[in-house]
Length: 114
Length: 109
Image 1 (tube, rainbow over the protein chains, first blue to last red):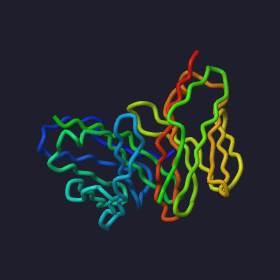
Image 2 (image 1 turned 135 degrees about the horizontal axis):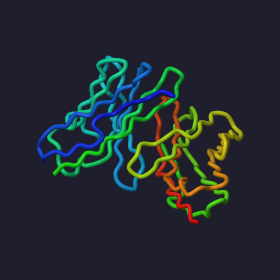
Image 3 (image 1 turned 120 degrees about the vertical axis):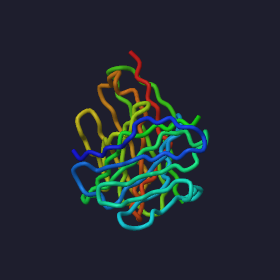
């Protein structure tokens, strides 16, 4: 099946710094990618929908200036957490939609902000 | 608005059968997914239903009734490795995927 690669899998950073997470579709072109956040023992919460070549659509309550999303190509979307704070510590997961409509998830990135 | 309900936790015995229910109310409907998620890992795809009826895939089956806004995931011949969270997710008319809260299944010997 299709593969979506997410990097880094784990990152620890200091409060106030920025962290970039990459999401790549390895063997298919993804016109749409999604970014989710998952807190412990909770389900996935959609943060934003990223369309190649256009601005991301953010869900209500998600600060677009804090969570910068760039979808520069059909195989790459990035999420940058700017000025990270401890409350941003979470599991961030991307997913990519193939032309058939099937959705594939990345491996997830665990962010810890000290 | 979107509302997807599933039980928070379930416990079952190895070798048994368990059914995880999911009810939904969404703005439009364009398919329902079931995912399995082990702790600390990303979800993995189990099934996709867009038409009413039962879809069987090995030990796992998924059922959908669009008129009732209801689905279930059936796991047969439970194994210890089936202990995980099971997420019901609905694709709405705008092709946005909304997840339920997930059901944590614990399989006991």
